[in-house]
Image 1 (cartoon, rainbow, N blue to C red):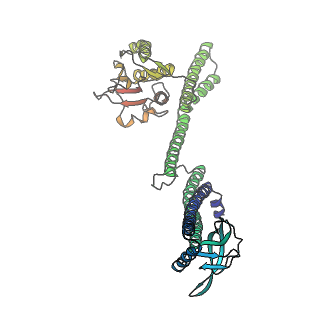
Image 2 (spheres, rainbow, N blue to C red):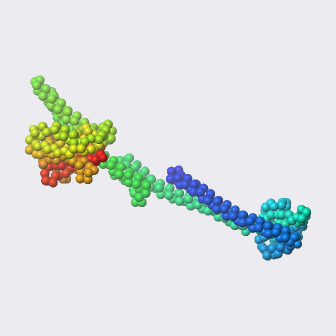
Image 3 (cartoon, rainbow, N blue to C red):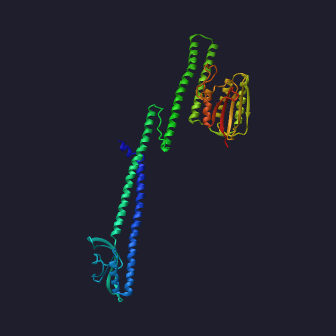
Length: 465
């Protein structure tokens, strides 16, 4: 089953495809080498024979048939590769080292391949030869002899066969090594992919702590594994946050619902006046409005974090928004005997959603007014960052502030450091600011001011150049 999976794997198929392409390329290259080397030897043989024939023709033209026979006899004694046969018109041998005319039809000026029997110290052997015949004519055009000039090509044939055999073995060895390498590579990759499959199956069965093993080689599979592990960590974090949110919803919403039910039940248990009923209904409506506001905040956070918000980003100057929000909350600050200071640097450009940016600033300012206490000072500032590439929006107060250990924790949903719950709220304000900041690719940070008192909320946006 494992072998079948290996053979049907994409990796093995890609290796086989590459092997076929490589083997085809190697075969074409080796065939060219064979054709070039064998053709070179064949051309060299033909050129040598042509030169010899031309030399013999010159000898005959200058000195006649007798001199031609003497030259052939001399060359026949001194050469082991060159073959000569001077014969009469009826093919009876006159001179040369070939005992008889080969079993081929005499054709003037045509290359012929033939076999002949040659005597050696080990006896008679069959050899291959290649040559050309031309007719010796007198001044009247009469054929007085036939001359066959050839060359023993036995060694050349053996070299060609060796080259061809070497090429064949080279292709076979290439294919064999390619198959072995393909199987090895495919098994290695399949083993790593199987580990990923096992990890995904374990995660699907509920083991969110399982991670994909990383070999450390830094290749594409390792990068994929690292991305999968990052995704699994994000999923585990989101699942943990979901469980926490569920617990917080059950804890924070159960009490208001119980109060609603108790208030209505107590009112129905006794007779009351119309004014009393009206007061109970108004309190019930107020409690229901708080619950609806909580659910609306949750829906807003979910919509922003999921990216399904239909809000559009536009190029704007945040100074106008900051000034409007400051003017809106100034009467509330006066009611609590708080001072609100606004410092705005104009002509700054960021890409943002006007409504969401207003919502984030309102949440930060509402949080400062609510927890800074009476007689405190609150300052809103908008200025360019020190690097000139960012815009900083700051809401700072000098109230009791937050312990450093809780600065990150209060950004989570339903986190309220006020355990007595005397202040109205659901613990979702800063979570909504965090979600809006992520949507704008901005950074939201809570800090303790240099004075050591109060809280400093910082939103950092990239400048839209």
